[in-house]
Image (cartoon, rainbow, N blue to C red):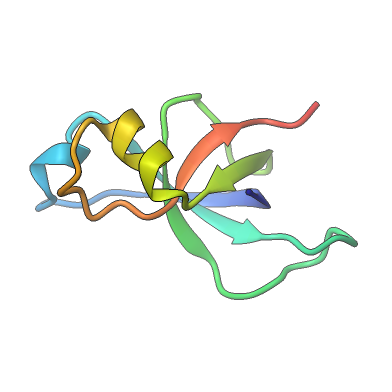
Length: 84
């Protein structure tokens, strides 16, 4: 699991069928001190996170496949929570 901040949203005119209906967010991974840690990522979200909010991400394949419902999905990162 990783902590990240939502810095934007993105869209795709052509995408894998498993991604239909999913929102795509641009997220900046954060280090332990809250500063940027690495390059921004694209993560799918069904929790409704907004720009400026922190989210909890996972790249665990099993969790991603279970949430998306397909083992053939190209999705790597998914929002699994929002910290208090």
